[in-house]
Amino acid sequence: MGRAMENALTVWLVIAGAAVITFCLRFSFIALQERIEIPKMVQRALRYAPVAVLTAIVVPLVLNPEPGFTVAPDSLRLACAMAAFLIARASRNILFTVAGGMLLLWSLQAVFR
Amino acid sequence: MSPRSEFLAGIRDLLPSTPGIVMFSVVVGVAAASAGVSVMAAAMMGLLVFAGSAQLVAFQLVAARVPVLVILFSVLIINLRLVMYSMSVAPHFRHLPLKWKALLAHMLSDQVYAFTVLHFESRPDSPHKHWYTLGAGLTLGVPWVIAGVAGFLLGASIPRSWSLDFTLALTFIGLVAPAVKDRGTLAAALTAGVVAVAAVALPMRLGLITAALAGMAAGAWVERWKTR
Image 1 (cartoon, each protein chain N blue to C red):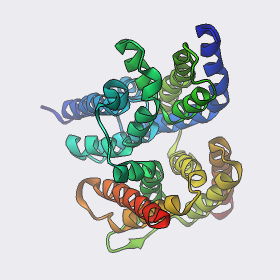
Image 2: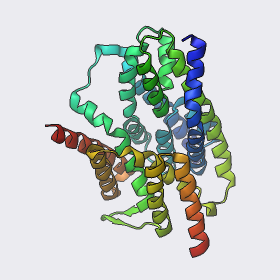
Image 3: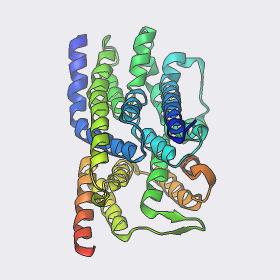
Image 4: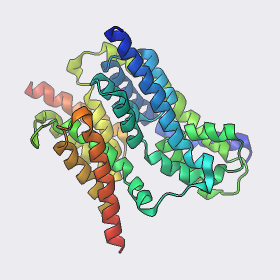
């Protein structure tokens, strides 16, 4: 099997698997009603899933960590990410956050690069 | 309310969320293009998975040549929150035929869920309220798939010097920053962030899962400790 074909197979396996898993999570209680019960502690932990997952994704994107607990961020991007955090806190609007962050990045890149 | 007016209410309530959703989907599409998958794969991912963060991470991990099972486990962890949504709306859909249940379940994204719950709380006895969720789901779902394809085509044609990949980080900052609103969410975010940096050396990008689970545990622990 060639590299390209193997890659395409991987992609379609991922799509099919992700579709099935995601649907099962969404359908779980709607399908089974009260026949299952989640322990209180797990319910509590689930409430923190969005914040924990999103942070786990975004922090490495901005800080570019390296093995040995060191980070090597792009300083312009780091500055923009911090500004975007403030915009997001103030506006609670994704569109403003992304537009503001990108405009700032392009301005900083024009000045410093 | 009639089915028609419920349906229209769902569309009306979700319309203000569509620009943000369109942009998020464009970002996901750009990421799909840079991961080197086909446009058909990007479109099917949007249609069948309909969950932005999971789509994004899945394609990143494909590009990083992570084994399929590890990718799927990551998708499972990222989408665990959907179980909460399912649990919360289940009583309202109890009377519906299985096909309706399956269709509405698939449409439970973060925003659709949030608006559905608000709407259902205000009128718990409306017999046609499931039409609201259908209207809401289509209002986000259709633009989601189209914008994903547009983002893919865009991403394939815009030069790297535009730094469009940074929209990814900005989108997640826009999602997570307003969600930190008490000690529990703060503990979850800080723990997940620190562990994500510390665990970067783990093989197969397992740092993401480790950090997410650590953050969830920290949030739950702080909440328990606070309420005792």
